[in-house]
Length: 270
Image (cartoon, rainbow, N blue to C red; front, side):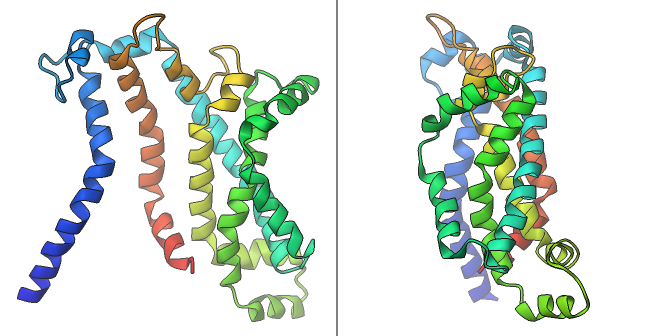
């Protein structure tokens, strides 16, 4: 019992700095959201004279609720599109040997290029098809852009499935698509959900494409909307902190509700 208690004590000591590293920025953001402009410039961690004015002001100064709604809808839709593209692609490359070894390498290497390289071509492409300044345009951009990430994340899960399971399905008359949907997908469901959460969060946080392809409050996402709190001479740090905390809430709730899938997915990965 003493050894067990000592191990737990060392575990707490070891994990405390890690927890503090991730929790400290959030705590500081909370503190700033209750500070006045003068209090922010004072440099104190906690507000000396707390105020609630930043929270209603954040929603009044900009269409914050609309920005959050746009980000949630675009990121969830883009995440579903990414999974719909990446899952059959990864299965075809790994199991059906389509494209050989080079296709997987090309798919992963395409994500290494800086996103700004594709900014101008995508701008004129969306303009040509009438999807510029639309949520659907962002869904398509994010959905395709995150396919390499999802491909890379799904590959280890597919590798862990015994080939005998798929061979038995083929002997019973199941084709590749039916095998993927009815047999493979349920087995690696935790990995699929974990991948979906990751690519959804990537889309939710994206700023470059959203700032270039949207021009109105009807289509702007949260990262772009938060940047609007910067004034000409002074940044509204209190309102920006309140807006950031409000924007964190949907992602936090998604991760909290899907936590068991994230844990199961991490256990499945080799």
